[in-house]
Image 1 (cartoon, rainbow, N blue to C red):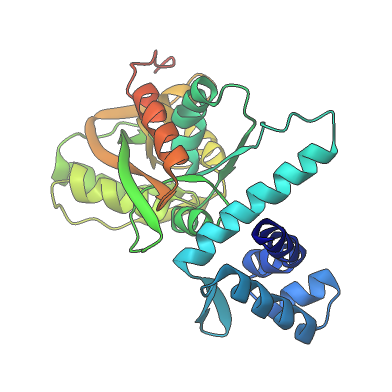
Image 2: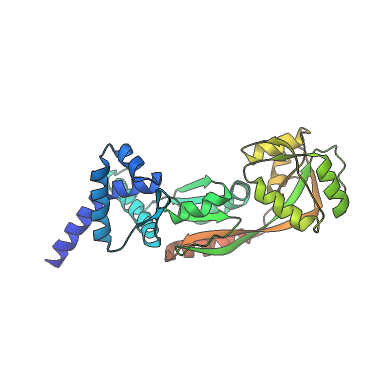
Length: 304
């Protein structure tokens, strides 16, 4: 009888999961109800029932919206895995064990350093790699939208665990024909006089590089072009539109397609932090293998 009672609880819980995950993804009960074509009252009832079955609150208030509690974040990750497993079990063409490895990362590191390492450790497991703004990476892991995240900055969160994962080097890149001084004071003056090409992640990257590479010299950005993607920003630099600050690996890889002057004399170290959910021991073990792969020396791309 206890087993039958437990099975009934699981069946009821599965019934309420779509509504719960819709709220997680939209951040709002009203938006989730609209997506599911349910009334707000019906969805509210489902969530109350799910809270009772889970035995602890899954959401907390955040302004007018809802935010996952640490227990809710763990539950959301488990719920997605359970629904994915059921979907794969219903399709004989899909291997049941092949649940995707969902990773969120800032784009420069994600494309040119992380992705080759993921290929080495993922085995037959599918990879879902999403490039996100620095401030969005931890949120996606906390809310169960990613299993693993890589970002520039740690955030205070009871539901997340952070570990230093990789040390990248930030460098100034300029058009090949431009002369760039190396002394901090002269370089700071040069940066004030020349347009900078920015991209989505560049606020943190520029500030970090200026603070470390210019030894405290006063600086001010002369804003030029802005692009969503790092690759377009590098192409613009190569075309003479201005200078930018990018990871060294990115500069070396992209200089094959877009000739660049890379100022290696003024580098700034920048730590990438890995974010996992507290208690996710499987992801912690995978991260250890990934860290070993990231530490292996790699052949750098052609440089100019």
